[in-house]
Length: 467
Image 1 (cartoon, helix red, strand yellow):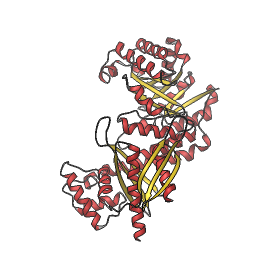
Image 2: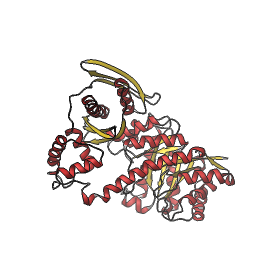
Image 3: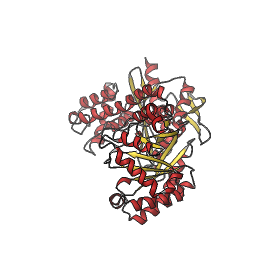
Image 4: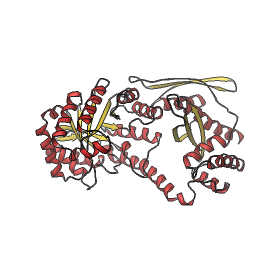
């Protein structure tokens, strides 16, 4: 019986009103790993500093699943991603290339021969770094059959261990998709030496059916999403393979007994995100995006919606800082308001100050943080292990201070450009139903995160001691 790999693409989905925070992505990855999902797919690298940290942190949190990240069709693409992904216990590099004429021309601006060469060269460069390399034939359904066959042959020859056929348009019915797979196996005998996967768009609400039809024809990997937007449902495919997989000799590694419980938690994460974004969109006309025309009362109301309980003095300080920002742009978003509140509200004498920190991480060890803080000129040290360098640092601080607060949000943003770019972090901690935020800025994202965490922590400690 064939074991079908289910590859989750939830974090790569793009849709209006759907996004996941840094913290939510790590939690989602842990849930998928626990569920037994074979492959967890992440977004690629856009901003090297921020995205590299995201990939490293998620890779460190995953213990069993393959972690797959796409690389760009450039000379530096594979190396850039590999530097962040190599800590994963089971890394995979993905090379995506259009194989239909329309996408080659308008998305990649390449002719067929140039596209095939770029795909082969990038796969070869990826293979030199990572044993597991996947070629995603984008828009394969609308490709010229001869070109598709020659490109797959070139990809396998260059080192691709997995070949995924993408029905980007989602225009095929299950029987048609099955025939497409049959014809491709006949045209490209070499494909039988690779792990063959499919990715089906759900434009006709046929993605699940097309995926199962492909399994009946010998496909061994299915792309889906645990929270599907326009693709196959991972939960549906897992249930189908469990209930009827014996019909065509197939099964999956997904833990069916845990499926319902984990799916409920995933829905909570993703529904909350969609609800928040929907609220922002629905309230945009009533003040959720502030402008220079808004007064202190309007700003305080939005701050309360974000969970802040600002004093009259802090409201004035935040409003003064807000006006300076609003004078330069039409709208100020809630994310920007978080940063303004973190830097302007409840500025207190620091109880805890960062002295030194050492972070150790790698592909064969868990991330470890050794933090030294100063409290009333007395040193306090702690060493902790965590899921990635940020988590390890935060856990170390908790062990030193003996205080644990709910991490409400963790935001990363580049504030300058270039190799020595400054990174800004905003950490939001929740205590007693109130939200406290801190901001940190550094060329080192981990250092910025530690400073932001301590800033928020010091505000909580100050208020607790005042009481």
